[in-house]
Length: 266
Image 1: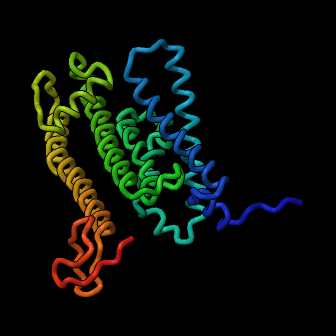
Image 2: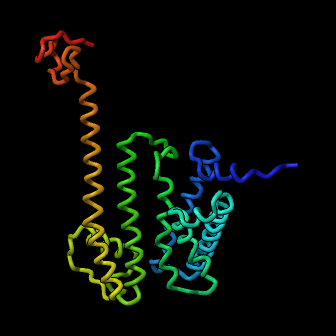
């Protein structure tokens, strides 16, 4: 008789990214998240009713899978209350919220679907072993790029959801919303697309403040880290004097320029 895996075993595999089973589970979840986000974008374009019906069916399946994952994580959690109010659990709940209330046909709830992409943050919190990326510079660059793309995706989805119904001339598709978000967050402000609703204008203000605060901070963090890495590599190449500890010598130097001690030559 086969015994069911324990809660600890299940929790280990849904959090692990190093073993083949854990990596397969997490890659599958990531794939479903990306598929769901892609379907959200596809729905912003004019598509035949038959395809729209198929997309809706797939979306229901995906939300069901995410709801199942949330319940499994809740079942495995040692502290249920701590799990419910943790950051990732709140993000996961937002992702399945439209599915839980879809039966009631609360259309405005579907605006929360654009936060689905936030669930990918779980896979970028630590070193990205799942892709065999362990170089610190590469990890930081990917995190910054992912953060910027995530913010743009969410703002684009929200502004499209808010403006498409009342301002469809400018916000026809998701690409129009992406264009508006990038132009707004970078404070370029061409002015060729203007939000019409009060909520759209509030979102635009939020985009501007986010762009002003986020982009310089992220880019500055990357530049600072690159400078620190360059300094570390430079220090590794320097010849340290055994007498006074001076590091700054020419590459072909044989004696310390401060105290005259003979330098060790590799």
